[in-house]
Image (cartoon, rainbow, N blue to C red; front, side, top):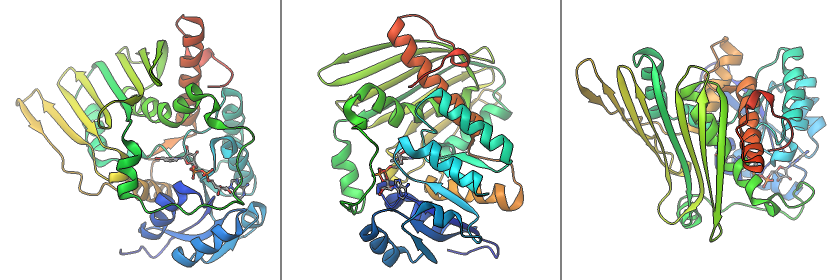
Length: 357
Ligand SMILES: NC(=O)c1ccc[n+]([C@@H]2O[C@H](COP(=O)([O-])OP(=O)(O)OC[C@H]3O[C@@H](n4cnc5c(N)ncnc54)[C@H](O)[C@@H]3O)[C@@H](O)[C@H]2O)c1
């Protein structure tokens, strides 16, 4: 991989699965970033990861990593419950932040983080890495540039019962440690909440990436045979109507994608499980000459591409291609509104909800 002359010195907080599967390699391969430091409370894990990925520095204590004057940015790759406090500590130490999705678990905590981002003037990007899927990026360019008015958007994210068989076949074996820090309580004790945070966060961000702000919604949840299906009718600020389908898990292959109907064309996209590192299959229909366009998107390493976008924004002032703080807050608000709508059976407005997802 050819490297730029100026590299963003990144420290990764957490040596768990997502760091092992995505962030260490992404920082190493990114043309404009350097895996400067890694940090975890689990010493054995840090040693194993340092031997493989060769960061310049290694830390067992987050505050010591943040005190390093050469460190410029942090990737927060910890459990959801630690995202907001870890991001705030990094910002207060003067470091830019790329924080894993979801930004947080409740409206109030992400709003508090938003205030710190605005006060410090530092950059915060949320790890909604599907925004770096080249197929989806080509579709987004069409929607923003040529499609004209959006009539409607349908998006679906349906995890498969066979998912772990598939991902175990392509991912390296994760290395675990008894010393790893876990949040209090079991995040999987409430599966409605867990699935919404883990999977719904991707669906909501993709819908917003294409459709813009979601101003109102009405959600229904059906639970049967251990599966959960949320159908959500949404209204976008631009006037388009939408339908979101989050199902965990379908009795078939991974099933994720979207359809968009616009004034001067349409988009149909099929998205793969991310661990195949394969760009979405996208068909863009241009009404002007009645042709279909099907971008290849050869570079499907969304995780490396999101690090490159983050570093370009910090080092060269390029516009943020990823999800920023307002996108992260909006996604949490939409997920909380879905939860309130399911609880009450009534419509909910993301701008007006509070509380946990
Ligand atoms: N974007 C994606 O496709 C994707 C995929 C999987 C997971 N994720 C997200 O990644 C995040 C992390 O997932 P995971 O499975 O790697 O989590 P994990 O909890 O298994 O691992 C996190 C690691 O961070 C360490 N840690 C936590 N707090 C620490 C602290 N204060 N100081 C030092 N070390 C600390 C823990 O010891 C642990 O080793 C989750 O929020 C998840 O939603 C994103």
